[in-house]
Amino acid sequence: MSVRVRFAPSPTGYLHVGGLRTALYNFLFARHHGGVNVLRIEDTDQTRLVEGAAQNFIEVCRWAGIEFDESPEKGGPFGPYVQSERTEIYRGHAQKLLDSGAAYYAFDTAEELEAMRERMNKAGVAAKYDRSIMRNQFTLGEEETRKLIAEGCPKVIRLKMPLSGEIRFGDIVRGDIIVPARDVDDSVLLKSDGFPTYHLANVVDDHLMGITHVIRGEEWLPSTPKHVLLYQGFGWQPPEFAHLPLLLNPDKSKLSKRQGDVAVEDYRAKGFFNDALVNFLALLGWNPTADREIFSIDEMIAMFDLKKVNKAGAVFDVKKLEWMNATYLRSKSSDELGAILLPMLEERGITGISADYAGKVAVLLRERVTLLNEIPEFGDYMFAEPAEFDAAYRTKHRVADTSSLLSDFVLHLPQEWTLQNIRGYAHKYLEEKGLALKNIIHPLRHAITGKSVGAGLFETMELLGCEKCVQRIKAQIPD
RNA sequence: GGUCCCAUCGACUAACGGUUAGGUCACCACCCUUUCAAGGUGGCAGUACGGGUUCGAAUCCCGUUGGGAUCACCA
Image (cartoon, rainbow, N blue to C red; front, side, top):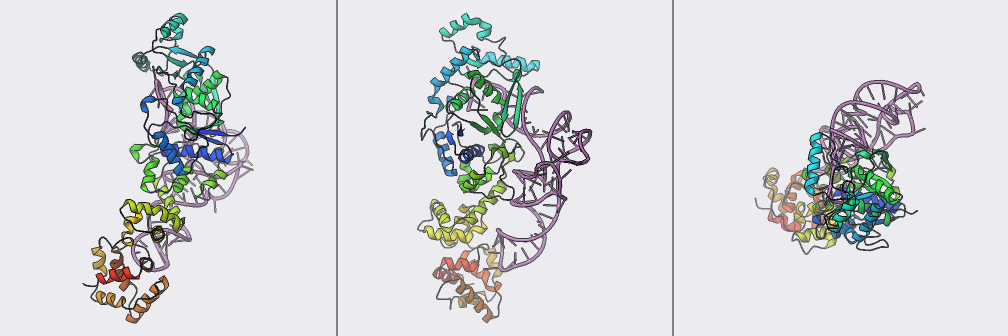
């Protein structure tokens, strides 16, 4: 049977980096096996909907290079792919569960449930729906139940968990998992508003959509027994499960907003490359071969193996992400960098620059920055006159004859403005004066860039052009 | 607290039951040098603990400790 997997986010806001990794693993797994990658929007909680979130997910995934074969946008043979458009399907299936005795009606109010939990907590027992004492089909009897339903009394449908025995299932990354059924709650399957909860919708959809492998975060592990029981209740074969290790804060708790950026958008906005972020995320919990760090998405597809996914959570180390981004920055072509840098420049009001020139500046300066978007500021002098001059740097290298040294220097600059000629000229000039390179290179750097740090000076001069260099040097000649 | 999951350098990880426990980030030192980087070389640093099984355990089993997740008419 061919592989079908799904990424099933809830459109309640931005896409979390952990979510992106889950989407990535699904995508890699699907592509590796020549299977199908499905996007399904789980919007059954109407109170938490965020406008545009679903579209944003698609866009962010696309930015990251993750494609879906079936989605709300593209459609597909098992649609609709938005759960709020499938409510009739869930109701019908809930009815089947009712008919077979795998689920039951309950009429408790929020207050009654709260009181129940409070009593249990006081008694020191696990807070779990006790169907023997609450208001439901069993305690009320069939007749009363029918009456309440006929009267339109608010009701939910709950899963009837066995009171004994155990529920077991296999997990590709964790092996067999066994849970005593009595410890699992009688979860609500269909809410009083007629919408299903995650448990029902997810099982019904995964089955109906032919999902073969459920690859999701570890936070779902504790509720998987419920899902397994639902498959049993429907008489369906459950899919394979693979619960992914969590992404962690430096203090090892679940990666949260409180301790740094968690939205993919944040990293995108900061200027991280899509391929670097994806590469970094992929290696958080999975490792194809320990002797390399850099992998293209195609290489990852070729090597991806769920069995090699780690069990323990992984700390999201921004420092390593930065290193990886810097590594990607150094490996990209001038054209590629120019195309990405140009809009960043325009965003900052720097216009009239060609993509070709932007790319060359990026190549010139990339070994000194981590993110491409540092370049507009770090190399401001490549796009305009230096905005300011480092006074301390000037003072440090300015001596009595610096002015004459500079004014003589511009006299016989090479006609053919190449790196080799500029460097040759400088060395010859210094040799004639009986001086060392350091006697002039700092005053020159100061005049041309205004800063004490930067790329190789002759390379900088070459790219800037003779005219601009002369002009800037002359402007700094007076003491 | 109940249930479940997890445990190799500070971080990410590698290691058919047999390795001086390897690589990467970070950190430190040195080299290179035109500032700052990058790069090169080297270094620091780990199998949580206790029992077993075995000729031999990071690896298998049990326990302890520690960490995490989850316990809604949210996903």
